[in-house]
Image (tube, rainbow, N blue to C red):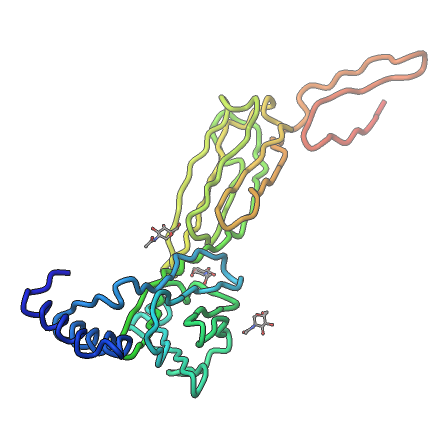
Length: 291
Ligand SMILES: *[C@@H]1O[C@H](CO)[C@@H](O)[C@H](O)[C@H]1NC(C)=O
Ligand SMILES: *[C@@H]1O[C@H](CO)[C@@H](O)[C@H](O)[C@H]1NC(C)=O
Ligand SMILES: *[C@@H]1O[C@H](CO)[C@@H](O)[C@H](O)[C@H]1NC(C)=O
């Protein structure tokens, strides 16, 4: 805000001559100084208030935009966007006092003005927000006489993962095998997948992998490995998925199944004329008596 002395004296002369019409003198001076010298005393406090919005896909968002601290005349509010769906800067919505809100390049009823032109509030609402809407929105107030004033509003989308757990039926052995796979598909940001294995912590291990999709989502997969022993059979293990788009973490449980055939059969006399046959197997063995 530096002014050359010559302009300062110009301004004071102007004020002296138009002291009875100070408001309009002030605005005209602003035009002169903003347009030519990019200097303005009268609108120095003018501000456009926006925001930085994060919302879960499918919800309704408000893109806030308000002009404050100006007495200039508002001629138009316009909205532009640069999003995944519209990667080129796209003029999509204007609001004027005569015509109200209007779509510029095609109608999209998900947008609705919730601000008020006469309050210099250009806030809009967007319902059923999708990943394609993610990007930067620019809200522009066109004033007379000072011209355009804008703010940029980033819109960030969260997408909850689709979670699933699949487990394998392992057969007793000495080699490590995959016991279960926990998947958190298509989330933004990437989901965190972890296992609660309790007392088996030393006997199993997890490996994680993730795939990024072109639409900005990520699929995270965690596999649980272990040697299929009788010791781990029937233990309950949980997979826990956390993600900012989920209102709470998701937990999926499963019981480790290690299959083995009967190993040793014991026959004992339970009481007189009554015998008991015992064996251990998974799944449970069928018993057939012969004599
Ligand atoms: C907006 O908020 C998001 C999420 O909180 C953050 O990652 C990002 O850096 C912010 N962007 C700006 C321009 O402040
Ligand atoms: C938003 O989505 C719901 C459910 O899919 C649908 O009924 C509604 O018409 C959509 N609203 C708009 C404005 O597209
Ligand atoms: C993103 O892309 C993946 C892989 O093509 C797809 O499965 C998923 O449904 C997409 N997600 C959204 C929110 O569009």
